[in-house]
Figure 1 (spheres, rainbow, N blue to C red):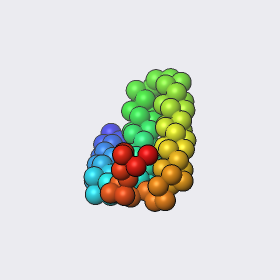
Figure 2 (cartoon, rainbow, N blue to C red):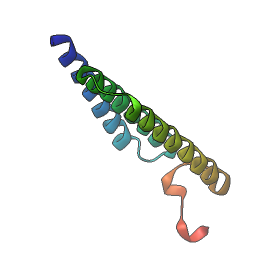
Figure 3 (cartoon, rainbow, N blue to C red):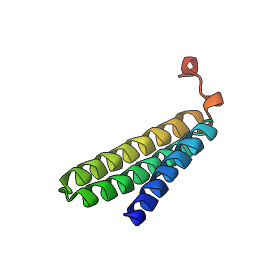
Length: 99
């Protein structure tokens, strides 16, 4: 049981590190997307540990992983659109009135 609590703490620590990176790198869209993906992978890791320790089914994990992949693809599509229209992914250079 001690080993499970260590892995739970490690996954919660990685989620909190992802949140800190998300807040610290909020000026660039690419860095924010990377930290969001890190948070999603950390939550996926935590859910794998919880569901496997409870003896549950893994269909929900596949659904969560599919939604995380769709979220990443949508974020990258938005990033490409912003870079093509504005030239960079820095939020200070984005202006709604210039579109």
